[in-house]
Image 1 (cartoon, rainbow, N blue to C red):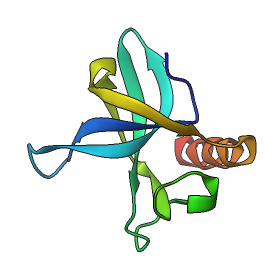
Image 2 (image 1 turned 180 degrees about the horizontal axis):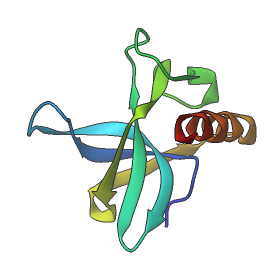
Image 3 (image 1 turned 180 degrees about the vertical axis):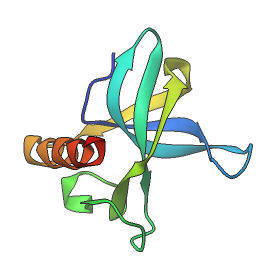
Image 4 (image 1 turned 60 degrees about the vertical axis):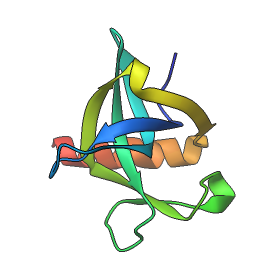
Length: 100
């Protein structure tokens, strides 16, 4: 079972193509065999929440809260690490800003 704050390696489909790639993603929640995730990119030019190697990322990265999608739990390859509470709170706050 995956929970909010888990960073996983998962198969994701990009919005501009039918191509599916294995990429790191942040779990927002899991329910009924589906996992809602936010994309993570190593392109530091993208807007989002920073995620550093010190925090567990393979490369300095960005959590893209404008790139949220639902995948089957079968598409999750493995759990990489979990965010620290302070970073999870930052994600919550940024998501709430977008929902207002």
